[in-house]
Every structure is written in C-alpha cells, then in structure tokens.
Length: 235
Image 1 (spheres, one colour):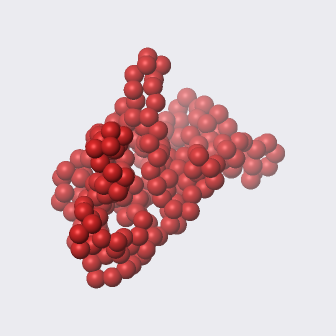
Image 2 (cartoon, rainbow, N blue to C red; image 1 turned 90 degrees about the vertical axis):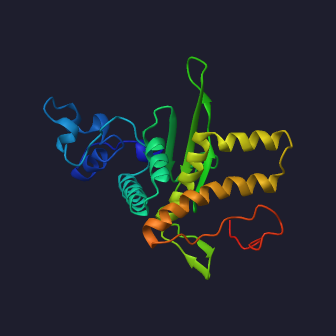
C-alpha cells in the first residue's frame, strides 16, 4: 500500500515521488488538472487506444518493466508466426469482461513474491453476473531453472511471464474451469488436473519461445506415468 500513499510536498524529492504515484500521480500531479494537457502532456508515449489493457499494480519502475516485457512477449509471438497464440494474447489484453491484474504483491500473504504464479479471482458484479478475473504474480528479477531438451538452463524472465499469461488465457477460455469441475466431480485426479493445466500454459509459453529462440524447447508434461518425461520437470 505504501506505493499509493503520497508524501507531504515539502521539497522537490517529495513532489517527484507524488508525480510517480499510480495514474501518473493522480490528483497529486498538477498536469492531470490542466485543461490543455492531454495524456499527461505526452501523447506519443502515453497512449490508450481502447481503454482496455492489463492492470499493472506497483511502482513506476515496476510498471514500466512489466510493460516492456509485455511488448517482448507480443513481438515474440509475431515473430513466431503463431496467429492463434497472438490472437489469444491480444484478446485477453483487450477483453473488458476479464480483468487481469499483474502485481508483485501476493494478496494472500501481503508480501512480494519471489517467483511467478497465477491466482483465479472470479467475482460477481453489482448486477449479480459472474465475472472472471485473475492475478498474475510476476517478479521481473525471477529467472527459473527449466529442464529442456538437451539439459537444464535459466530462461529469460519474460518467458516465464508468458507461461503465467498462458494460465490466464486458459482461465478466460474456460478450459481451466472445466478441468476444475471435472476434478470436483472426481472425473480426473489431482495429478491429471495439474498436467492438463500446465500443458496448456506450456503450449503458449512455447509459442513465445519459438519467436525468441527460433524454436520451442520446453517439454510438455506427461499425460500418464509411462510418459518418457515423467518426473523431469521443475515446478
């Protein structure tokens, strides 16, 4: 919450801090009150084509870093030639009915995460309609070790970010909820549920990998125990 609390504007350092609060400083930045200052007086950089985008919560530096990594993911998807993955990415980014919050702070613990993850946070709106929402926990400094074809390596942080976006896409398209319902009905066990959810996220992650590395490298999870890659994953 500290990143949302202004400081008394008693010196230039405090004023600069207030201007970097979420929303370009909000009411604490006089530029936002100026009749002729459109887009913070910087319409080339501060664009909002349709009013719908991922909600990024954090410091100014964190938001800029996440925005940069989102652009890397989109550019990688364009280079990969995977039109379906690119469509999925743009649809979840622009969907006003599926809120995606990207943050470093885990709402369950109130602490910054040391890794990445996805939390489902569905809710009902004021009219009682079911709305889908999710939280991507993303630490830009986190670089996980992943076992791939040919060995074990640390991957660029935005590749891991793409994996969590894959979970968010899975949530939006309904496959995640369908598998959870099957698990609740005991139609599938917990291991199968985990494999299905992770496999679909890996499919999207590999589309990002193809655009960045030129080929996908991360192996899919085993669907059954006899799969040759059983037990060869770090989660």
